Length: 394
Ligand code: SF4
Image: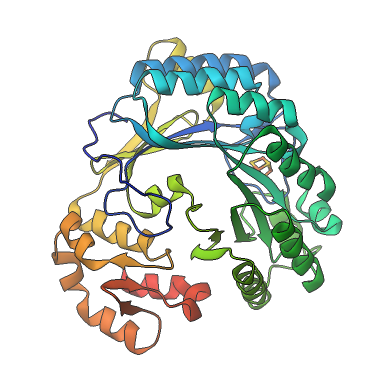
């Protein structure tokens, strides 16, 4: 997590297109939740309230000590449930970022929020602290699906959180959804999509549920008590989402993300454009100048390392240009607009593309890739099976 990133802020980072100049991002991980959802395998812990204060102290010190680089074009507080912390604690962390690398003009500053942990006063305090984008974990508006997923909020509480953010003055709101769970009927998903559209947010992330090993959901599926997810059903749900969101002015700009014009997520575009970022907190990843690193996973270990004045890095790897180019293409092809080939060559040279020209031709012939206006992309008709094209390409 050290080094001097060389990229500066692009003039427009939120159109949804691949960025030749992705800017510079900061990710902050908050590894605490009120309750563990049945499907979750993220680095997060419930019932660790005693660690909240020491963790914030450690994070703040880590940022002040180790943050370096150009002003951040985007900051993302993720988790876990960042809003489980008090707004004043989150404000201290954001102030540390502003006081070290600084914030580029117009920087997008996102925080993930779960409905049980926020109200209008919390949103007001977070806006006053400088957060300007809220990503709210709604997941579903169907009670049966929320129960199955192990979510502890109701559909009305989820929509209430969106309303509270708006009343507090937030203008940049994302709703997170999950589709294709074993409990979901077609009408549940349609009602969820329609309810999300009615909430009039600028951005929606909707991910197909995956059954991750080590989760309670995996145990239920493995023991036959709950049916496994069905890729064909998930493909149908994806089509429903694309159709309804598209008709409502939310364009799909990435495999699982829809946005109104100019509301694409700047921070995620940085990831999909293979940009550079620092990661702070337990288990956070960073990527600067071809060096990818990650920190100690357990909050206690992270707190202890900072307390001893030691580094928090748990590991790193260096990616050579070939590997960086391949990874950049894999990430960039998730974007509906694809990767601009001229810009890609300027960043990574021409060798990677030249070495794959036969595969690209073959994938174009089978409809899994196309080239339009100088951009290599996965056509919309193949978006849900994008992994097949990516595997062959890499
Ligand atoms: S709220 Fe999010 S991070 Fe926390 S347990 Fe549920 S899915 Fe995981």
